[in-house]
Image (cartoon, rainbow, N blue to C red; front, side, top):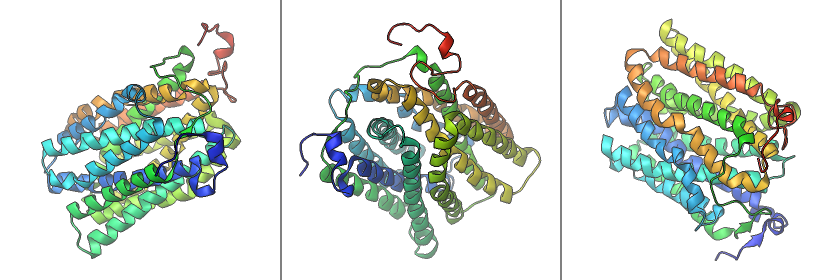
Length: 412
C-alpha cells in the first residue's frame, strides 16, 4: 500500500531501491519496453498489414504528435493529480495502447491506438523531464541523465532482442509481440505506483502556463529540435523498409546496434557535458547531424547503398542522445518554481513542427525522398546558429551571450 507524501530529502535517505532517483530509473526502463516495441514493428506492420504509403505514415505520425503539441495541458491536469502519479498513469496508458495495436489493423484503428498511446507517452515525457530537473542536483544532472539514457537504451535493447528471438525463431506474430511489450510497461507502472511513496519536491511549482522572455533561446532550440527529430523518427526508419526492403528482424537488429551504442556512450556523454559545457556539447551534436542529414539525402540523389544508410541510422541515434544537454542548460538558467510549467510549455513548442511536418513532408516524400532530408539539414543548421548564443557558463541573468547587456523586465 502506498505511503503518504514525504519530503524529497527524506526519500534520498531511503535504501537505494526506494529512493526518488531509483523511481526515475525504473520509469526510464518501463517506457521503452512499450514504445520500442511499437517503434520496431510499426513500419513493417503498416506496410505489410495496413498497406500504408508515405502519405499514410506521414498522417499517422502527425496525429501521434498532437498530444505532444497539447502537452501544455499537463498544467491543467496537475491541478488535480501530482506529477509523480501522472507519470505512472501515463505509462499505463502507453502500455495498454501498444498492447492492443494489432487489434486495429486499419488506418482509422491505428490513428485511434496511436493517439491514446501518444497521450501516455508525451504526458509521461513532460512530467519525467520536470521531475528529473527538480529531483537531481544541478552538479550531478548531466551524469545522472546520461545514465538514465543508458537505462532506457538497455530496456530498448531487451525489447529489440526479444523481438528478434520471438519473431525470427519462435514464430510470434505482431499481436503477440505488441501484447507482451505493452504488458511489461503496464506491470512496471503498477510497481511504481505501489512500491514508492509520493515525494514532495523542495520548491512548489507554479500551476499556470508561464512564458518568460529570458527563456527565448531555450524555446527556439526546442522548436528546432522537435522539427529535426521528427523527420528522423518518421522517415529514416521508413526508408530502411521501403527503399532497402528490411524485414522485422533486420530493422530490430539495427535498433539493437543503436541501443548497445547508447548504453556504452550515453554515460560518457554525460561526463562530456560536465567537462565541456552545454554549449560545446550541443554544437558538436548539431554539426554531426548536419553531416548525417546531408548523407541521407545523398542516398537518394546519388544512389548510395544500404551499408551507409544503416551506419547513418546508428550515428544519428548517438548524436540525438546528447539532447539532454538542452535539459541541463534550462536547469541552470531556470527559476526552480518554473520547471514543471516550463517543461509542459517546452514540450508543446517542441511539437509545433511535429504536428504538420510529417503530413506535409509525406507528400514531398512521394516526389523526392532526398528533399525531405535536405529540409532536416536546414533545421540542423538553424540549431547550430542558435547554440552559438549559449554562454559557456549559463545561469539566471546570463541565459544568452547577450543577456548581460539587456535590461530585463521585473520577474523575467
